[in-house]
Image (cartoon, rainbow, N blue to C red; front, side):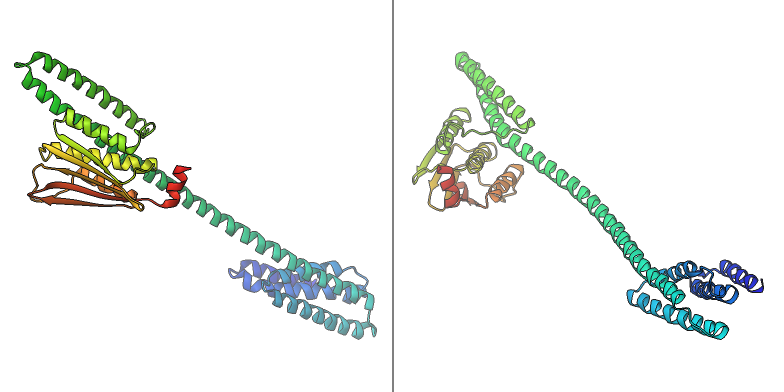
Length: 360
């Protein structure tokens, strides 16, 4: 009864301490010794206390995180049990109960194996939770990255649509403005010709409206489904001569080759923008488009005799032109000469494998 009261007092004292973790190992060792000894002291070793010894040993080993320390603690528990119980057994009964020792030691070894497996499970569980947390964070980062990519793609698409509207509709509206000015001047002089000019303005308005619809639907204009770049530029030169009243000449050097659609579209839009700027900003009267095919790339030069600015400040149109050239890994240069006029010179490279793929 006295030993039981002391045992309960120690456990009560343990639960009142804040640093229980440091005291727990001592309480468990006391439990281990009491569980092992009382069966021998009072019941001559016949009491089945082996199970209590195994449970207490398991509790002690579970407090140890290091594998080597667990093995060492198991060995110490075995030695401590054998020394303590052997001393008591010999002192009281002058004999050794080998079967009882074997059973208790088996429980201690079993407790060491179970504690080792439980700690492996706990470490695996902690690693799983950690990996799940990392995976969750990676998922959030990937989600944020996806949103940023979508925003970037939407921004690039908005820029592309704005560029398409500027290059297509702006070109036609420039020609429309010229035609309407001409129709207004011709009205008191030649009403029939003025009427014809207004009809051409209606065609330009319809064409511009169609371009707007195509751009809003984010459908890229493909003027090369049935015609080549050479034919498209020649037609563009004729239309610009007729509608914008700027005498435009088109010439081709080298052997025309079938080009990728994106390269043809880039060259076409560059020519459109250059002619529009020549009429709108330079008040040009003559223009020349020179297209040269070579083995390594495409050369394009758009010349006009308009006014030369004192300082070239690229606006939206020229910036779009530079971006188009950059997307094709090309090079653009603006030439200004008071005698020769203003010229846009563009080099658009292409690779032979890509050309062979197009030809095939």
